[in-house]
Length: 202
Length: 320
Image 1 (tube, rainbow over the protein chains, first blue to last red):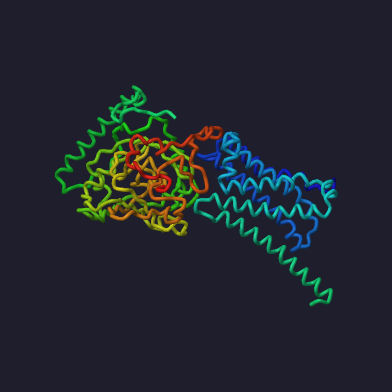
Image 2: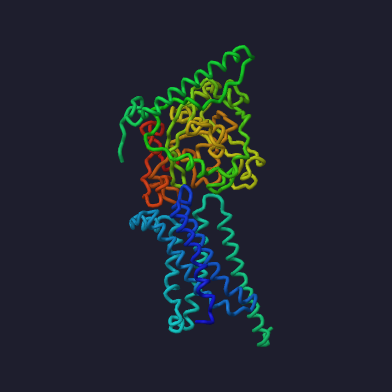
């Protein structure tokens, strides 16, 4: 794809957060509670990539920039990557890969139930991200990938429910999510109104 | 779980310090004693001087654990002290804004000698002890901290608690100028905590004034903080300006904020989970903790042999 020269640089940029985390971990540069720092930062990047992915269409709607759609898959897959990293750090470093503890947490801690569900929902999205899959699923592909909204909401709730008292950070993500929803809903409403006018129903 | 049935008064092998340090320590104590002697001579002639808040020469205590303490770096850079911000590194960055000298404590309520006392007078005459305690945060991490402090009971006694005193309520300084975190209502300022009078008088309970043989750093609650090692860390209120003896149970801040999650007693208990996370395990802070598994949390943070009797017959899942 000689035309899509941006793909490799973009890929490398998306890898920057995990590269930084690995460097900091190796350099004992994560503070007194490195596992907690790794969990928090990998979680934050998961949310950011989810929001970036969901921002692509609103950006197109607002600016008419159709080429931006080409980066959405990479962003979405990186959201899945960071979510998997986040889950792995939790399962391996926090719980010592004790699957009994993991299962117990998933069942008994609502914020982990929600977080795990969010990751689980990302799996079919990642699996069906290829062009072959898009062709195979046709119209249903778009319906399936609407799950991305649900994943983002679950991710924000997961974050909000684990914070002790300072809810600023989760609320910021929630706010951004609401704005992104707002742009899409606003566009839909305007399009529906225009259709009604066109059909002479107004 | 290894249950230690060592009697409180016996010394452990690990309490025998190595020879070089021991010799140095004697020299240090001798020189500080000489310093005190020479300093007090002219002082005897002056009108009643303020005694120094002395952290040096703290006696070791049989209540200290033999677990290795966390490093000074860890203890002073990973703190929950929302008065300076909610990030773990915020207190280290902002607590320097707090002026800890001069410092007074208002003692009132059910006491015979209420008043506002300078910190030196509050501590005067009570020998400082080194207490190496485990501290278990409600967030499920823990450290081992070599505090220097005095038994709270010795301090309270000098103010004459009356027979109506059932609880002790503590209050932290409220000053958004010095404590930038207080400019936002993340908690209802000032921070308040409390103990039942028997918990307050218990020999384990101390008012800490130092850390690692030196004055308490600001981010650790300078110049005066409570340490109650068998309870979650939020009970160990920092930068105390008020001590009040009361008949009614105080409403501690975290209980006021989220009563379903934080109670008055807050005894460390692996069998009583926080509504949102488990309390059965904790992460011991340490430089190799990236791959170290979490430890099992112990009832009363391992101090059950000293304090369990205080709660005999109590339903600890209701009185959390």
